[in-house]
Image 1 (spheres, helix red, strand yellow):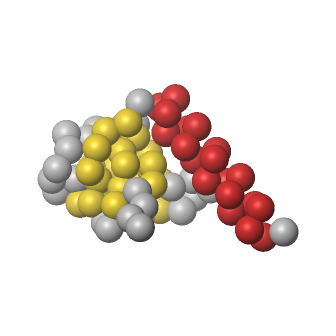
Image 2 (image 1 turned 180 degrees about the vertical axis):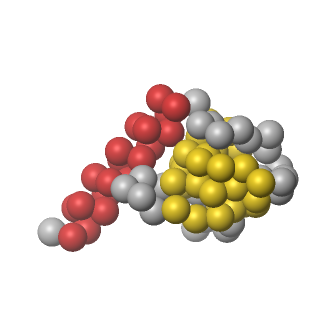
Image 3 (image 1 turned 90 degrees about the horizontal axis):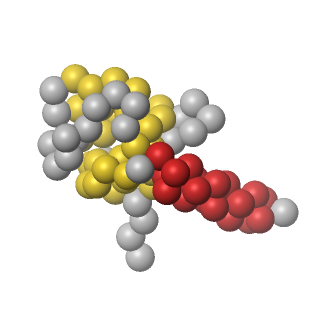
Length: 74
């Protein structure tokens, strides 16, 4: 099974961007497949931003992920 996680673009430098997966979890991803700008939400899979997302959908997806992770901790 493959997973892709939404992240907010914090900085873009050429083909690379620093993204925030929430709660300060920052990573560098490749953005050659999308036209991402600072403030955009992107769907990240295997280190690549593969799709732009609207903020509402991204935040809803992140909320669902947080619920899943919290349930696993119990």
